[in-house]
Image 1: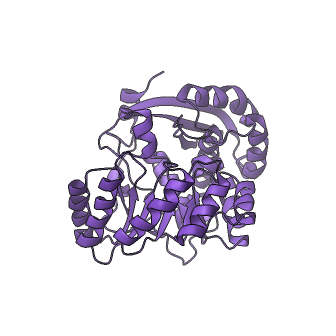
Image 2 (image 1 turned 90 degrees about the vertical axis):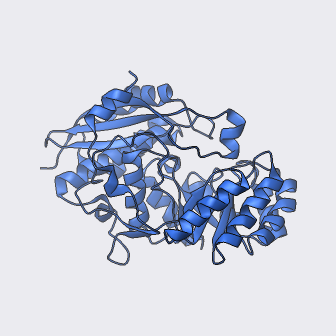
Amino acid sequence: MSARVTAVETVPVSVPTETAYETSLSIAAGEAESYDHVLVRVETDAGVTGLGEVAPLPTWPHGLTQSAVVDLIDDRLAPRLEGESLDRIPRLVDRAERALSGEPFPLCGVDVALHDALGKTRDLPVYDLLGGAPDGEATIDLHYSIGIRPPAEVRDLAVEARDDGFTAFKVKVGGPDFPAEREAIAAIADAVPDARIRVDANQGWSAAEAVRRVPLLDADADGLVLVEQPVPYDDIAGLRRVREATGVPVLADEACFSPADVATLAARDACDLVNIKLAKTGGLTRARDVATVADAHGLPCFMGSMLELGVGTAANAHFAASSPAVSYPTGVLNVHAASTLIDAPEAWSPAGDRFTVPDAPGLGVTLDDAAVERYRTD
């Protein structure tokens, strides 16, 4: 007899920022001083607790506030999950999705917690629940992420990353000082001659601005790998315009949440690849659907994050390790908060540009109860 859900609990936390990671969105909204996330616990009659995490980020499409996430899980999802079998996760996700009317962030926390609980009851890592590592080894390639910073700081970070073995870089752009961003990209190309540089504007430009600026950054980088979400999320025509006018591959992020979004982007020739984030898709179940539809349309995938803490970071890594559609280096292990809220966080701290996901059951993480209580806000 399979394990059944006995309770679903939300734990809102507010963890101070430790290192800055500026984006065009964060600059526009004002610097965040904390990560106001929601932990999810799914209790079962097998004595196993599954863990999930939600990173709401209200400045994003469908981002919600922390309190809205808590209310939606407590009021709409928890009553529908109690008493249900862990063996029915896809059906549970279908029902939960209908109850949320298109809000994926709360669904993500619950979906991940259900998978963690199932993995623990079956004594399998989550990546095996998802089909296993494509090449038999749950190892992922990593890039080095750099926020919007002065060019001299960017150079120093690039040199540090180079010495650690990184050649793939993701650099935030789209801020108020484009000449400085050009200098920063050129500094990386100079410091790391074999650098593979991608830029992420986080919707920071209009289509006209992107058409002018992307070729300049492409030249500064000695050839960009790609440009991520250069225009507002709802400007699909703008994405296509940037792609056609610049010749630089376009990655859709904020424009791509669901399998239907992938199909729309593909039908309109608006992008060359899509960014899968568990928070956007609504968790692991729908992330697999997004990857399947992307593959059917010939679109490779990148695995992104919403700057989750330890639980969400582990979930991202498990998906990246399990999906053959994810073919670009990822930055999902980057944490900029003062605490990951998990025990033994060093097990999830990469040394270099490749990382092997631990093969412990479920997500392979346990909460640091003392840290959770320190940063808990309810």
